[in-house]
Structures are given as C-alpha cells and as structure tokens.
Image 1 (tube, rainbow, N blue to C red):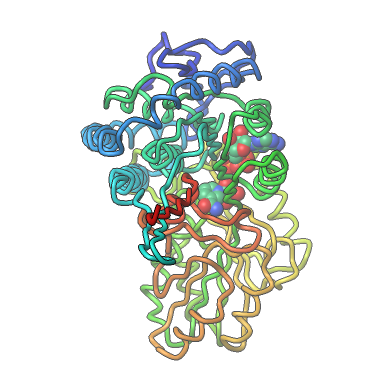
Image 2 (tube, helix red, strand yellow):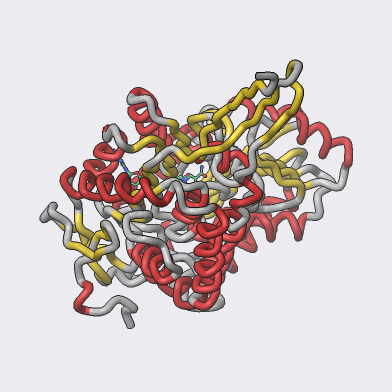
Length: 488
Ligand code: NAD
C-alpha cells in the first residue's frame, strides 16, 4: 500500500514555513521502481518559485545568523530524536520511491542521522582560533561566520542521506537553505522538512523547491545564493561547478564514479566475493561507492567461477522482500541506457560472463535488470571507462598490483577503490599509490562517516572543500580575522 495519501497527489514546495503549490504548472510522475505504479506527482517549479524561496531564506538569515550557536544545536538534538523515532517509516519511504532494499534504506537513514549528530556539535565545530602577542601588545583572533543562503541540489540514489550531508551542517553554521531534491525521489525531502519544522526550525531557515534544471539554474544564478552544494552525475556536476563559480559562489560538486576493486592472489576469496557482490549489486549498483570494475590479479580462475556462482544465486525483487539483494534500477529510461552499455561491451569484444537481461523478461513489472558480468574487459573499452550506475560489473585482468594501480590511475574518476589482500606490503603500496580519495582495505563500500570528508578525487569532485567533517564546516563558514592593538 502506498504510504503517500491521496490528497498529497502533487507534492508541495515548502517556502517560508508554509506548504505551497508550485507556481510552475508542470508535474512529473514518481513511480515506485519495483511496481511501476505512480505514488505521487512532483511539481516542476519555476524560477518564480526559486525566487520566493531565496527571498524567504534571505529574510530568515537576518535573525538565524544571530541565533546563539547552542540554541541552533538544540534544534538539531531534537531533530535527531525525531529522525530516530521515525527511522522505520523513513526507510520504508526510501524503498517506495527509490526501490532499494529495506536493509539498505535502513542503513541510509542511520547514515543521515549521523550527519545530524555531527552538525549538533556546532558550538565546538564553529570555534575560531586565537594567538596573543603576534607582535608587541597585538593579538589576533579568527571568527567563523555563515555565508547567507545556501542552495543544495541532490541526486536520486540517496534521498535521505545526501540532503542530510548538506542542510543540517549548513544551518547549524548559521546559514539558511534552499533544497532542490531529485525529481525522481522527492518524497523524502518533504518528510525531512516536516520533522525539521517539528524540531523547532524557524520559518524560512529550510525551504524546499521541487523541480528540475530550471530550479537548479535559478539557484546557480541568484545573487543572494552564496554557496552551492551539489551531488549528482559528472556532466551536471561540472556544469553546476562552472556556472555557480562563474557567479562568484562557493561550490562543492560531488560527481560520478568508477570504483575499482583489486583482488590479489592471496585474498580470502569467499570474503572478497561477498563484499564485491554486495557492493556491485546492492542498490542495483546505483551507489557512488559501488564496485563497478574488478581487477583480477593473477590467473583468477577460482575467483571468476565463484563470483559467477554467487551472482547466479542472487535473489531479485522488491526491496521490501527481506531476502532480496538486487532491486530495480530507478527508471526504464536509465535501464535502456544500461542496455546500450551491454551492447557496447559485446561489440567492443568483452566476454559476457553473465547476462542479466534474461531476468528482465522474467519479471513483468518494475525496472529490473539481472546481475551482468563482463570478463576480459580492456581499460580502453567504453564499459571500463564510463560510469554505468547499474548492476553491471567489468572484470579486468592484471599481471600484478602495479598494472592494477595503473588502471585506477588512468580512470578519469577517483571516488573510491578497494584492495582484497592479506599482504601488508601490497596494502601499503595500494594506500600510497591508488589515485582515488576513499580507499578500502578488504572493505566493499569504503564510504566515510559524517565526521570525515567524503573525499572524491579527479572527475568525481569539483571544488575544494568536500562535504562532511571539518571540510563541511569550512565550506559552510567564512573566516574573519581581527588584529587588535592594546598599547593605546
Ligand atoms: P543527476 O545528475 O541526473 O541529477 C542530480 C541533480 O541535478 C538532480 O537534482 C537533477 O534535477 C539535477 N539535474 C539533472 N540534470 C540537470 C541539468 N541538465 N541541469 C541542471 N540540473 C540538472 O544525477 P542522478 O542520476 O540523480 O544521481 C546519480 C549520480 O550521482 C551518479 O553519477 C552518482 O555517481 C552521483 N553521486 C555521486 C555521489 C558522490 O558522493 N560523488 C553521491 C551520490 C551520487
């Protein structure tokens, strides 16, 4: 049964503490990817809606920036409590709009809550620095200040965690916020706002404007939006970074990925395979930290046959079924793009070890695709280079670790990489030389926690300061230096 009520058939925007209809009259259906049934419609808001939200946020900033930091933090404590109380309900909503498995969704909610925990430390995090006696009778102090209105633009794959990477910390630091959620998974954002309001957030501090590229452009161009946090695909991340930076805004744009997992000959095969299966096929491969390329070092015979065996055993279906690991991809349009990649892999000469297209025909409803594995993929093939963002895995063969590291170095992306080995020397070489920002040692999804930066490199990130951790605090604050003379 749909968790969204009839009367909320078209989602509302949240502006200045009110649920309002978008001025833009277009809407888009939001189907449940597992059934294809429309659960709600999302408004495609206009520039007018953006301007109203930014105006409200700008007005709210005048008092919010002066609200004592501990008082701001107390709202986050309350928010933490409310999110925890609603953990299961939020997880079910994620399954419904995104399609991922309930266990994954439950974990996503937990990751989001941890961001709120971190942001609640604002009184400590926002502390400045001082040095007395920088010259005779002269002291220096550094204070942190918020920017003003921050715009947040989020992707479909983590409808809870990614917005929570952004607005709790931005708001704790004294900014006000306009969120533009993914139009493909917009429901969670409204739930997040409802609970934030219940936690005591004053009107205008957090606003939500649903829609697509017009809303994004409205935020990027608006002179009262001072900073932009973006998470999404590579072409859009680069576009957002360039357009907003060109307008003088501070920007962090987290982008696409191609994460390599190196399996060394001494790896514990059962454990490595369990990690790779879960990383590659969990959430239908639609995670920016998903494994999408395995580098098999050595002859790899045992590894490849066991991997195929495990992929054959995977249970495919709705995210609410506890046994299911492989859930649907987000839309049929995305699935069609993925099918194009499978054709390209075959045409370019890779060996199709397991063809997930057969499961597509077996499951009538929903946008499913079975586990698909290509072997003997060469690094210059399209399937090795592009982010496919689906349950499609490429196996590359390497003689040794140096060759494996070279594949990682040559990839345009550098979000994550993992090695499976017991060899300390290999681990150290991997840590020193792998050209990516988040590494795993015998870990399938080495995503960082809220108190560390989410640290993609190369084309996986545009900007300087990453989301979360101290980077996040530095991103959402600007520093003011005071130099004082006391000998007058
Ligand atoms: P997407 O780029 O399609 O959409 C992201 C946001 O940008 C959405 O809010 C969307 O409305 C907006 N957008 C899309 N096209 C636009 C355009 N032409 N102009 C202006 N705005 C536009 O991304 P997605 O498919 O929703 O999310 C999946 C992608 O996000 C993957 O590439 C994944 O790797 C990436 N991602 C990265 C991270 C990370 O930490 N690096 C985390 C999560 C997701």
